[in-house]
Length: 201
Length: 215
View 1 (tube, rainbow over the protein chains, first blue to last red):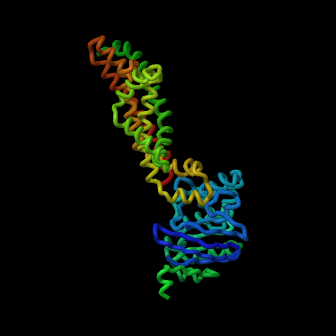
View 2 (view 1 turned 120 degrees about the horizontal axis):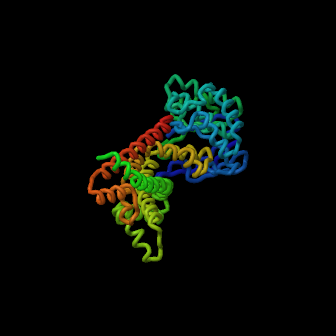
View 3 (view 1 turned 60 degrees about the vertical axis):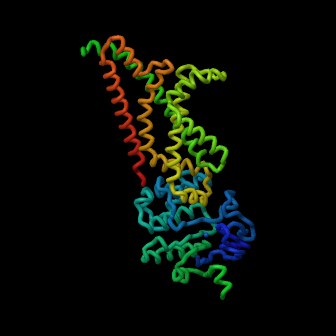
């Protein structure tokens, strides 16, 4: 279970998040809908505190799939996925490659390992980004706007991947503007509104 | 222009060319890594470090290399730092070229998407791992053409070492020209420089090709 307590974020003088609290049960999908990283707040996984940007083994809880994927252009698909497991988790090369190959197969990319990011379509890049995040064995996978950089037809594919991961018990946090998409897949939707609007209501 | 005369002076020209190549090679070995380090310092958040390096770059780019050579060889002994002629030449060349390379690399680092650091951080890669595996290969690809320009300049700049009495290629040609009162040695010198630069160009093109596998 993921718990966030008293999360705050401001840009300059503008307070963006003011004391957000939320809980996500294991294996659930929470969509956060509405108009970015916090300044302060506490994160707990199963009641234990962790630092989402920390580098300790105990802090390696969250995987992130970026809106624009941010794949490493100088590395092949396989190297993109195996780099962190080898350098951070100290896996040996054979094991890292075998694990990555498994992920690629699950995501329908089995033949793409040797390609470079520029040779992939948008949807394929996103799946590589998902595989790269999953290779670090996160407890929670976060997506930033997973549908915004994609062809509308591909939205269903992403939804299926996300629901497939849910079946495997992955807890997922999705930030999106795409309300329809959120309603399709989420167990719970957290609507974020500007402070002044909330006060008006 | 007799073939016999050419074959008589070629050995001394080659000897000069050997020194030119040595200075060229060791300057690159020293100044490329130093340039990368300086460029990291130039983009660093530690202000005093940044200011010191900015002054260094300003001094190195703001004064003639010839002056720097004279200063290192004849000037530094005044404060007790004495170099052999050859070492003095290397020190001056490495310091000078590192400043130019630092500026080139700084531009390279700035044109790599900052999101790459972000992506590496969420994968828990350390700063040095990120630089080595992700950022530097991308920077190198960006900077090869500008580095190539400097490398080719270096081949010819190495002729400045005559000022501290080192016998490089150009000096060997000069000696033969004034002794024998003919321009033939200098024409050969020009030809040898052209060949050296030609080889450099080919090598640089190969390096560029090595980095063409990604976009």
